[in-house]
Image (cartoon, rainbow, N blue to C red; front, side, top):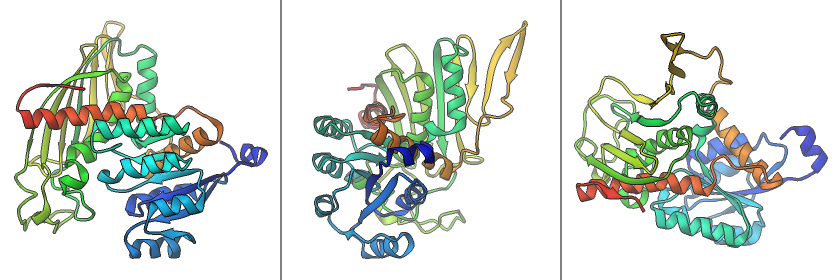
Length: 359
């Protein structure tokens, strides 16, 4: 929304922050630039994080209990930036308190929690959005427009890769399954899955097969890496996950995700094959046939640089406009549920050692 429109309406969205870790700072930096947003409170269980919120971002209303904050600050909306295991409860509480909700990815720990979150927000008549910033990336927008224009025809196969050679987080609780739900599949694989699924047209998943392996993260390592000295003693997630999803329309999606793998270099990409054309995300390119010739089409310009500040600004702008002006949300709770079904399917299939139906 333009500044002029904001001035005309006079509306401001009062937003409170639940969870003040690193990702909340990226959000706050974007939100502070919106003239139609007022940041009214911050909650975290760590006093050091609350002190940082006060000193660096000017928060006055600081809490260690989100229930108390919701009662006292009278927010219009909340952004939930907690570990995955603490997404469902504050979402349900915030909706009951009359707040719209944006929750960082993944939406929850499992499908059942997603349903609870969606139901709570529907019952309260409030918006629910999932922080899928990569569907706001200019490359993703370009490929969605190409699919809508019929450039790919029937989508048959998509291959997603979110691979780090050695990128186990040495902060937070990313290595603890009980708090995160899993490792690279649910932490970084979710991003490539969500943008690829969006480009595909969001078909319904029906079955999954997969395997996961842990072989490096739970051991002490002397290998020089970008994030050394992770807590290997509490590491209970996978290093590498490989999954395959079948959709009701017959399409197949394969996903490879790793925190640590013996590969040449990190990979962050997906490729798509349709019966009329194909594409890749990075660099954005369409593969098709023209004038009796196999052609690779490279766009001259797809939009602004899709870095983290740009994507977070775009997704939060969409959330604010959805709350204030009923604009359509690009990543509503139902989109988070669809991706969670894929994630759950991968982990359940790996545990079962066979293909499993997706519920």
